Length: 100
Image: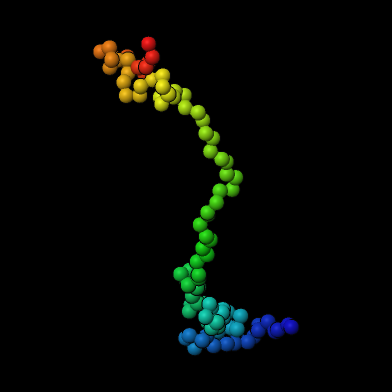
């Protein structure tokens, strides 16, 4: 549907009541036709915020790698609470062997 351009038409501002050219009036966010002096843009606080949910899962998860310990201190070969340094009075901190 086509409308006339309103080149010679006049309209009243819905806020101040002054006469303006029809093409000068703008529709504000409340739906009123207002003059350029009374026009106010919509405040950003009035828009609902877009909130996406928190991420829960990883995109490409990898399993944990279980590596063997480098020195097994629980074996029968070593005492885990005594070192060579503490038995001989020196500062050597190697594990103390159990066997002869």
